[in-house]
Amino acid sequence: MSLTIEATYEDGVLKPKQPLPLEEHTEVRITIDIETSRARRTAGLMGWTGSVELADRIALDPELALEEGA
Image (cartoon, rainbow, N blue to C red):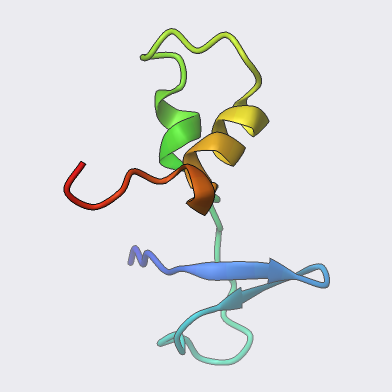
């Protein structure tokens, strides 16, 4: 059986965002896909030469957001 869930890593433990349909002590194998921001995923496509951290800061800064209707 395959199951895809969302979870948060906190205090050394993965915490699922919803209950899992598993019996206690069921052994599982986990593959982790780390979510990345759209700015990180596309920085290379737009020829960005700065750091991915700076791309994130610029892309996510509300003061730099385009005004509605612009």
